[in-house]
Length: 247
Image (cartoon, rainbow, N blue to C red; front, side):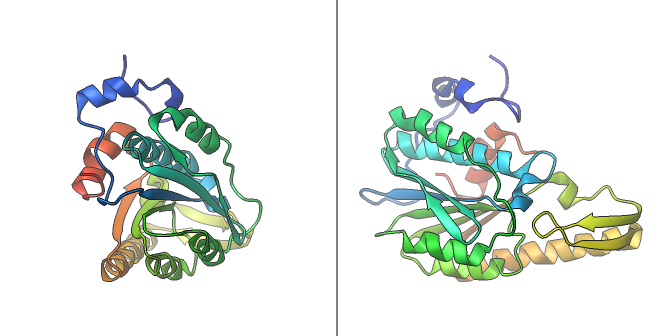
């Protein structure tokens, strides 16, 4: 065996080995009979950017969390947010359905054109029934991302927000005169990147993430910000447990 690295096919993982390394089969999030865990995966065009790729990271995180839910005999459903809609897959139950889950996640591709994340989240919320857990995995690069959080937090489900950004978004290696292109709209903006510009960017990025964390706390939701270069085993065994997403 060797350590999992980003880009490996999750279907090749020996989950029994992972379980022996550390107790993996924990009950997710809340003690409730017949819990449904709904993974809302942001499929907007911006998620296809970054190195490592944000959408690929999001799919692997969804696979790992979904597997834990299936092993706990909870129902797991994946919904993809794209355009103005949420495309919800049939809920699965039992660890024997993990390959169906992986196939569904592997087939997800980014949306063509702009995504209205608020409308898509509202559509996803309307498809929910009863209590459960919502896991939103998104880069939150939508001008109304705060409304997305409010929309989902208003449901009867527990909300967990996994905010994914790539290393080059967290600390952009930019210098000189540049033309930046919006991944969804194609709009461009010319900027000059120097030390002052990068410092201002970092300050605004920090304030932006902090605002999401405060909003989540006010709405009794859990906010976790992650870089896409976090290894999968660290994500499950360290980051999500440290943030108290997993028991």
